[in-house]
Image 1: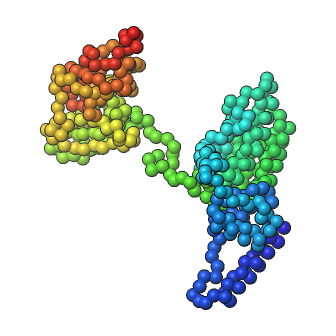
Image 2: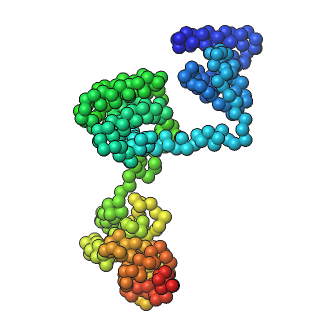
Image 3: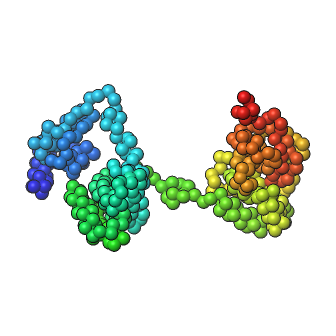
Length: 400
């Protein structure tokens, strides 16, 4: 029937092209490719679709004209939307698209599916999630796997995932349960227009299958690779970046001329604190080993993985960065320390690290707050300081 419908459509289209050719005078357009709506009607709209809603009157008329050629009996299933609310808002399409771009899909039973797409294949992991079921563990697993089989078939169609697909069902010890899940998956995939092929389910609960690739997946079509992580989905830790920055300091020191006796490292605050180390031990060790003065400054808006090392002289950097003095009172922002034992805190004054001394409870109350700190000792990359009494916010108990 589908082949006959395609043949009839192409014959009618060819007759229309010939009629247009006879009526117009060259140069003239005799045929244009179908619009997105018309392609959707030609390729997807069939007897299994109960309703198609269009909000453009022009496209609505064109769709009905196309149905006259393809399948006149389906004309009554196309409806023109004329509501004041945008059609995507009315039918809540945007949230559905956002859900299709997420890795995790929640099942009605409370279980979850996790989709991971790679260059070679797509892996789907099935988990029980919030679903605990009854006292029978095997029934809980079977119920979750059956729900997953139906939803996986639906998600493959919606996301248009093709190629090799590996499904990691929850392990089932009963062979009959495995066959029941496999049959449920095969039944659900019968609704798919793309050709699929399923292998048997392994003892570990893995199912290998293929689905004909028809184009880009919805993820590839609607998104692009992250310019920072290049699609990894993970970033280096602050500790890893601080080690990379230390190696970069050594490289720059080895290439710098004999007159460049200082290096300026600009990086994320977390990386800067780790590079300075507890009580400045790490940066002191680096200075001794590379025989250069090291100035460390933080920039909150710098990405965690980005840093910059500039060679120069101590005099240049002192003029550029400014020099703090002992007993000077500065405005600074208190932040949680990555180096000091919990509950430790540090402060930042225009990218300059201040290692705060004082009562731990008072420091914790000031996290994220602007306070005044008195500098006790000044170093190139950091200072030792203490909060000025009265500058920190009061505890609720103290107010009462």
